[in-house]
Image (tube, rainbow, N blue to C red; front, side, top):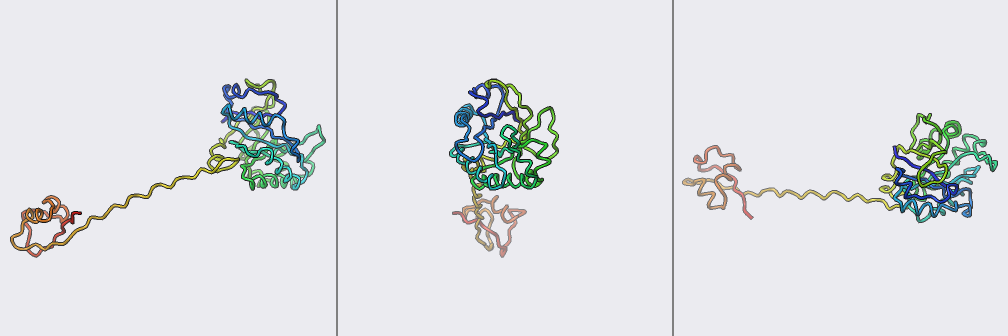
Amino acid sequence: MIKGIDVSKWQGQIDFNAVKKSGIDFVIIQAGYGKSLFQKDPCFEQNYERAKKAGLKVGAYWFSYALTPNGAVEEAHVFAEAIKGKQFDFPVFYDLENDPKSAYFPFATGKENCSEMVKAFCLEMEKLGYFVGLYISRSPLQTHITKDVAERFALWLAEYGDKLNYSGNYGIWQHSSTGRVVGVIGDVDLDVAKIDYSDIITKGGFNGYKKTEEKPAPAPTPTEKPKYRKYTIIKGDTLTGIARAFGSTVAELKKINNIKNVNLIYAGDVILIPIKS
């Protein structure tokens, strides 16, 4: 398991060097919310720069306020604009959750609509070259997202406690909202990742990275087949004399022609003699 945190403007000024030294390997940063670029998180730029500089693996998320698939596509475009020109080692996530403070209740729109919103947002981001995932709490995932959608994208699940009660595949588990980490003042969300997405993303050329081209293995050097001439033995020949005449050796001729006794060769027999270059 790889340890991580997720942060937004609510964490204020973060000492990411201290975060890294404390044993945290990745951070997922809120880029913003809604369908307007002015809703970009005011701390996103500094959080990204400082986390990268500290050597942390970085992902991002966008809090959705869409209620339709078309609205989710609009949000995807704004998200892409907000993170343009940056490189993310972890997925970029569509954050789908109720927000009672602003009377936003996407789960009230039903399972089919919620699933279509996730698909619309994530597929749009994929078209733009991103490795995308869904952030959602475990319970609404099971009640409001169809199985095919849950299995299609990277999955970051929230359920607080000592155990994640989910038997399906997932990549990241947010297990606390009241964690304490050196470098962060106050509470911070704690995460553990089962999958280190960084290799998949960087080698695959997602999230601002260029695809790593695997160099083909060098072609084996062809082995040149030995060339031979045929020689018909005449009366009076000896293997020593033949070898001397053609720049070979008795041992070489014996091996090539499978001669049992080098002192017994017969007129009329044909033997192979290597052609010396």
